[in-house]
Every structure is written in structure tokens, then in C-alpha cells.
Image 1 (cartoon, rainbow, N blue to C red):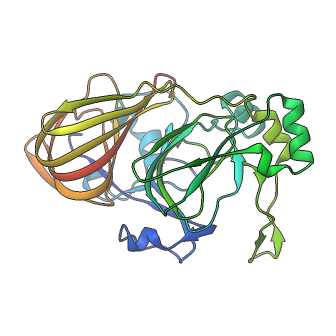
Image 2: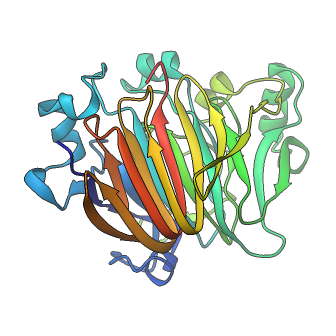
Length: 321
């Protein structure tokens, strides 16, 4: 298979979602409360579908199950990564995700370490990222007493920022922010606080998961130490934001010119075009690519060329994925 796998995303409506996935990326979304574009997904709750080539109509889930050779015969019961675009018209709930061991025992799926590349942020926009409790006992007491202002750590963000969110990190994407999220393929979220919102469809406040949140939260919070690297590949500026056992995430920035890329170790590559337009060339075959396009470069593709004006986020599975 020497052809990229171009994908049709899966969309999810959310209480906090908006319409910018349509206005910014041209997607056909289900409503103006669409919060999530599952762009590269093999998760059963929202698999992306191949739209070209011999596997047209197949989901990423089906390809992982039936054609593991496309992924270098990688191990694992499920496709390990999930790429999303999130549109937060309103604040997301404050939440925490379990690690692999807790998630496997309690939810029967992978844990959820994730990261965000900030696509858009209104002036003054903030994330909740981490907390101020020093012990589990203090964390429990502050939650019981609803000392949210004292507990949560607020971080201002702007377009181009990158945040790494390991499992066990209290976090929330703030109102007016869009992100490209790279994460383990998990749909497990423990909701710690939801601003006392009422779901208009049910007339009820959404469920909280206080015990699980306390169980899973890392205490005390520590900022992750990221080994960011910046370098050049042809005419492209490349930034490696993070490389962990779960995934590696890069930005490729091309402002005209040509870049020849080669994959060395990873069995496959996930690609999301965030801005601009240009060409992808594989084995002499040219493919037009533009903002909003997502694709997988399977195992058989070792070399490719990009040219044009492009901002791209790329991810590859880590050693444990």
C-alpha cells in the first residue's frame, strides 16, 4: 500500500460546542453545538472512514483489525492514537483522565494521556491546567468544600501554544479556544466540576465522578518537562513538541519551497493539515492537500515530499502504543 489513507472525520455534539468546525474548516457538522471532530480515529465510539483508494469506505477500526500490515503489524487490540479538533464555544467541564492501569481495571479500555496544540484563542482565554493541593487529603477537602478558585490552576494561552496533559492532570479547555488534540485512543473522562450547568436535553446537571477524579489525580501537580526540539527538513521548519511512550507530536511549517521527509522508526504517521494548501507527493503520485484534511501514511510509505504553504501537526505512536 503506497497510497495515503485520506479520512472522513466523525463529529460529536457537545453542550459546550459551537459552529467553528464548519466556519473555520468547512466541515459538514451536525449542529451549531458540535464540539469535537474525531479526525483520525479508530475508537469504536467514533471511527474515521477512508475516502480514497482500495480501502474506501473502511473505517480505521476495520483496517486495524483486518489489515494490520498497513500499520507495520504493530501490536495492540486497538488503534492506539486519536486526533481531534475541539471547538469550545463554552468552558469544558473540569476533568481528569485515568492512566492505563486504572482505566483497564475500571473501564476496560486505554488510559488517556493527551496534548493540545492551540489553534485559536480569544483574548484573555485560559485553560485550567493543574491544581494547588499538596496532598491527597488536601485535594479531597478542597473538593468537598467546593474551593474551586483556590484549587484550580489557570494558565493563559494563545494560538501556537502547546500543552502536554498526562493522565492524572486536572484540566479544562476554556471558552473561546480551539485545539488540535493528540491523545491515547480512550473515551474515558472523569468529570470533577461542571460549573453547575444543566443539560438542556435532560434538564439535569451532568454526572460528576468525584471518587474516580480523586483516585486518579496526580498530587502534587508538577509541570511536565518537555524536550522540545526545533530543526530544518528541506525548506520546512519542524518542531518536535513531545516524544513519550504514548506518542510523538510534531509541527511541520512550510512557507513555499519543498521538503523531503523520511520515516525512520515509527510504523505509521498521522497527519492533520491545519492551515494553507499544497501538494503531497508519494512515489511520483501527487495529492492536493489543504486546511482541514487528515490522513495516515501507512507503513509501506517510507518517503514523501511536501510543497506549498502548509501548517501541519503530525503524530506517531510511541514505544508503548
